[in-house]
Every structure is written in C-alpha cells, then in structure tokens.
Image (cartoon, rainbow, N blue to C red; front, side):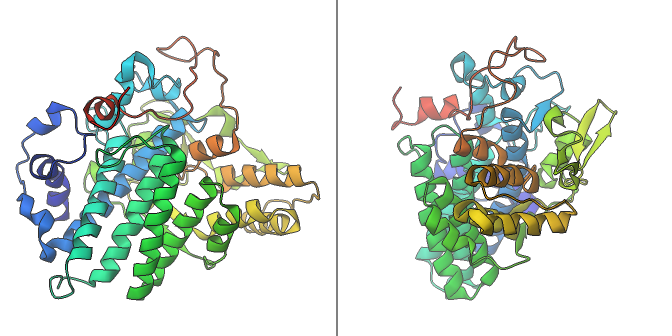
Length: 427
C-alpha cells in the first residue's frame, strides 16, 4: 500500500490540489498512474498515518539524491558517466543556458528513473514534494481532532510531520541559492533557515506534548543545525547540548524498488555514475589512514570509488545523530572543550589525539572533523558555503567531460519551472 501511495500521490497532488509551481513540466501531468488514489485521500483523517509514512519515504529518497547532487556540485563526488546534462552539477555550471540544467534538477525523479541507465538524478522536486506533503499533513492534523484521527496519536504524528518538514526546508536552504515555498516569494538562504527554525520549534513542542522523545530530539538537533546556519551560535549550542549520547535518526531503505533504495549506494555502487573525488581517496588524518572515509575502488561497470558508509540498497542514511551535535558544540565553544570533543571522536575512530591552544587551528580542525565524521551524509555543500571554503578544482580549471572548464556556481539555482511559473518571482 505504501508503494502504491508513493507512486500515485504525486499525480493526485498535481491534479486535484494544485501542488506548488515546481511542477511546471507538462510531462509530469500527462503520466497516467495505474493505481491512482482519490484526491480525497489527502484529506482523509483515517489515512493520516499512511500519508505520513508516504511523505517520509519521499524524504528518504530525496535525501539520498541530495547527497549525490550536492556532493557533485561540491568537492565530494564526481560524475563519471556520459550524461551531458548531469555534467553541469560536477562542472558547477547548473545556472548556464537559461536554467536548462537547473530545470532538469527540478523535474527528474530522485531515483533517476530515466534514462534507463540511471544516469539522471535530481534533488529539488522530491525535496519540495516531501516538504509540501509534510506541510499539508501538518495543517490537516492541526485542524483535525483526536476523534477524527483513530489510526495513531494525532499530536505525535503532527510533531513528526513538522520535524520532516523542517529537515526539507533545511536542506533546501543549505543547497540552493534562493528558495520559494508554496508559490510564495523568493527567499534568501537566511530566510529559509529562519523558517526551518520556526518549523522545528513547533515540532519540538508537539513531540514534547505527545511524549515522543525520539522526535523531540530529532527536531531539536535540526533546529540546532538551522540556528548554526543562521549565525545563532549560542542558541545552536543550547539545542545541541540536549542531544543524548547514542542518538541517531536514520532513513529506512529497501531493495524492493528504486524509489526506496539508498540512492547514494545506487549511484556509487549499483549504476556506478558517482565516484568519490580524488581529494578524499586514501585520506590521511593525524598521520594515519582515516577509517571514517573508507572507500572501495570498483572497476565494473565503470571505475568508481564508492563509500563504504553506503554499502547496500537497504543501508539507512543518518539524518541526524549525536556526533553532529557534539561538533556543533565544538564549533561554538572552541578552546579546550572543542579539543576534548575532537579527541573523543578520535579515540572512537582509533585516530591519534589532537592538541592545540590556537583558536584558528582548533576551528580549522573542527571544520575538517565535520568533513570526515559527516562524510557523505549531506553536509558538505552547506559547510563549504557557511565556512566560505574555496571549491575544488577552482573555477577556470579544465573540466573532465562535456564542459571545457569548471564554472562559478557554488549553490543550486531555482529550477526554471519555479522561476517562470511562480507569480511571486519576477526576474
């Protein structure tokens, strides 16, 4: 049933509920799903739990796609196939051609279902879809009463929907140059982080009311990340300090169909189009080989370096975990507290200890520690932008495939469909 909802709710939302203008491509409207559900299902309180699970499955797919796409724009992955459009991620030329390639990012399904070889993949459409669904479900749950919703704890589901909505907003803010929600005005990245913070605050309140400690912590760490991006270091640290040791929230993946597979595994191991960049191969840290960036060199169907962190289609992807909270604390607090946190992570990984009293050196080590510990988990592009780290290779360097040189894009532009169809965006 979940798979049926996943395949069909996208079209139902377009036809009956006028999903926001990211769906500017007529091709999507013309697809006929063999098992469409009625539009009223999206407004049925008895289907709340089913719709929540469908939204989460959409987010899970979108997160994996975002890790790949944003990683290729950053210096994490390189595309090794023959898809000239997808080359634009890797060569940092997504804004070229009047949004041609960013339009591709706005329509292609997150699992890369076309062409048949799997070389197509995008992040915007499915992140927006999961965010919109979460927002829609949350609004409905707020309007319904406990008497209406008999398939689960209404307030608990409300908090969970808002937590996932917050993470959708957060990723869209970290990866894109500007953003728009629900046909609204064009937002700066700071405005998106502020919106995510507000969404997470509601999630925390509802999770607390429902006695759902997992969702409360999930949303609290999300709010810490949003606040850190917004320059609210002290508040971010206050949230991060509430995350208990051992906490983790992961995606649930399955090998049953492409949509539910771990998309990082699919792109790096299965269809083998995304290879870890040369900068991370045989990485040495504190004088020893870094075990947290473990890679496997594969030679079939083409040569790729694949991350061992994503070894199977069923591997869950960490969305939020305690280590991230500790690194937020290290960044904000600095000094010996940061050194202590770094060395706790080093001890767990079997890495020699780090020692310094120089504030700049400590901060730089925290940044490096984030790149290692959170490797291939969806943080790299946001970190490059937040820390103003130069992109590698630099603009103007020879590009490996269809483009002559690397371009100057450092964030993903709004897809052309959004720009042309949103009445509140004028350019």
